[in-house]
Image 1 (cartoon, helix red, strand yellow):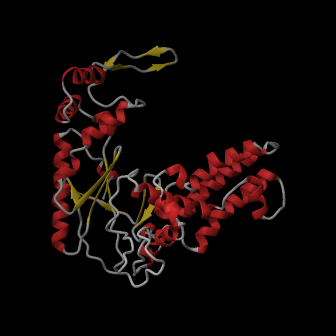
Image 2 (cartoon, one colour):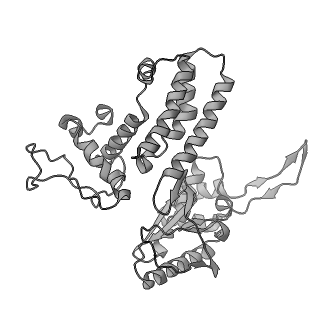
Image 3 (cartoon, helix red, strand yellow):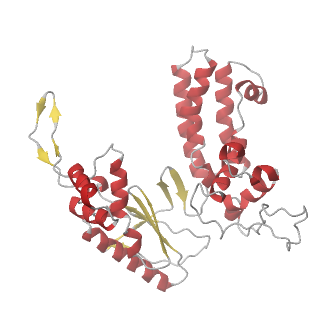
Length: 353
């Protein structure tokens, strides 16, 4: 369930927010400072040198500030507490997702109760949901999944089969072809713009930096989630860097030669590095994620544990579906195990890289 707050950062009540800051243990001079920072703000509109009268801002967080997002996170931090066990709430800034495993009709009833509680929370905190932008996605491999409408404030939520969430185009089948096609389209447009704008430029360093910042960044955003495993997607992504390297060097040398001249790794190799680096950060506490459900380390009792005592080798689980087979928690096993033991043992990120 993708939930959307209507004008989220503008609707936050000052009084409720100050009360929640107090619940976090903020009091005394610091709480008074927060109150002074948030309240008695005014705004006006100026067009062609003519201005409107000043108006008091009764709610909201100062946008463009460092404290604004922090205050908003504190404001919605109690949202996960209103749903029943089994429902997972994921919050990032003003993006909110609610999910529940549904195996029978009673699970739909629980999910509807969760939505009722979320709506009640929104009314109590003066934060309305934008019902038209709230979407329902059923993620399943079943050919005939169970179906039941879900509602917020008696409005049936629209079901979607693909949705853009935090820059990722997620599908109900957890396929990433559409996402790859979209980011390739965006990268091609930007690469074309760079080519037209810098047609006569010969500074290789500058052109390479432009490629890194404007083009490659689109191709590598969140690859830990969607890293392609099919030749179709791998080749389509790599083709962008092939074209870019040819433009930067103005040469017809083969791709491997151009990469060496530019000190470029292939995009596939870079995705390998992103995957193992992500797992390293998780294992060493740099990222707070519980992965014990998804990966396990080998023990001496494992029949295929043939390389002596190596407690940092991951156990390969059986992948029943193509979706799980291409997921991070399955593909990382072979990637991690191929690393030298000395590399896997280090806890320092710089040394690991």
